[in-house]
Image 1 (cartoon, one colour):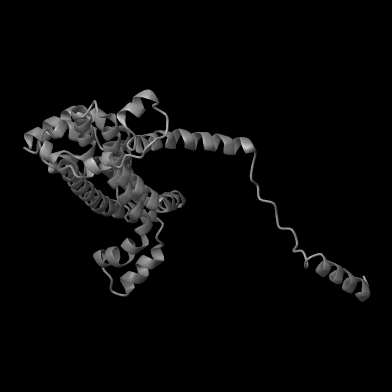
Image 2 (tube, one colour):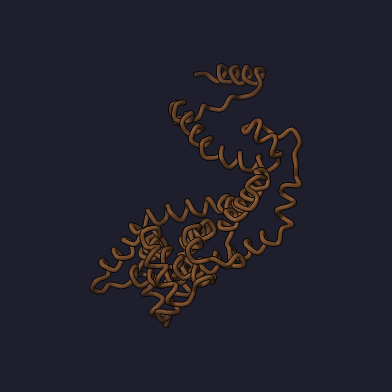
Length: 297
């Protein structure tokens, strides 16, 4: 191709609005049916949540006449009455204490157990890991009766520690299963270099293992906190004192007390689940990244 031809084509491209870039590779968007199914699933998941939140802004007569409609007048007083109720903030405080204590206990114990299982070779290591993994097959509904007897014999009924300790135990299997691959994936060369530099086992754990396992620690912390925040069955059996109620029990109590006032019940329910939704939304990428790292490890 001559120089004159190239110059002529460039001039023509400039007159048409500039030189057009080379077309990039087409993205594999997939069939439209996949996105339609995804939208349907998202709608089924978000529909009840939106109904509860919007229903809190309606009046009882509107909910009775048209349960699925939008509010003709947004009634903020339903949420204001819940936010000014002392029992609501007491239950928020109890749920926060239980959630933070459960998260701290599950992460601390799970991290130490995962460090031993993932970094050291000893007889029975596989059986120990399988024992923790088997804990996933025993939900709390199966163990609630013997657990109730144990908590009663320990004198922890109607107290927050009576809820915290069992929740830590039931959060340990997930915590260990997620953290063991993280700790096992740490190269042995790093540990050998640390030992040569005079770093002991505990120092290696605090200075090297813990920083490298931060993604997994964040993941298990979020899962433990959200699981504790939404726990209902265990507090229902352990707590009978209203002053120690967590938010799930508070929702039940409020629904029974104000069963006629549906709008306020919906407002109370939406406010009780809002912290967990916000917490999960903010750290969603952390959860996915931690689980992905656990699978790769």
